[in-house]
Length: 151
Image (cartoon, rainbow, N blue to C red; front, side, top):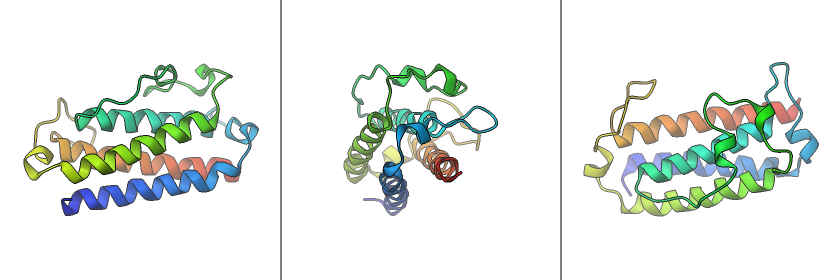
């Protein structure tokens, strides 16, 4: 595995371990809104959806889900189906993480440096830059989940 991918893999595993550690909270806690109406469950779903985006980025098709459309960028927690549970998102996030780890072992520098189909907020235009940005994005949100569940 390329050293830079090993670093990203390590961060994604830490995020997964944090989500597992937070799994003792009940569904009421996961849906408790903060002052802006956000709750940890929506953020967890958003993170799982972005791991699916990362899978697509590295040419791995994620499983088809009915929930992914409920947590896109810019959506709101109030649009989340009442039937969705933290376990659904947690399992999706963990499974995607395992698949990313496997794919990272297969990637070479040419793939890492390959073009990304857009430009991210940090200016990234390569697949590697996009993976780096999306890992940062997820890590920020996992911290946010911990904060929301602690309060």
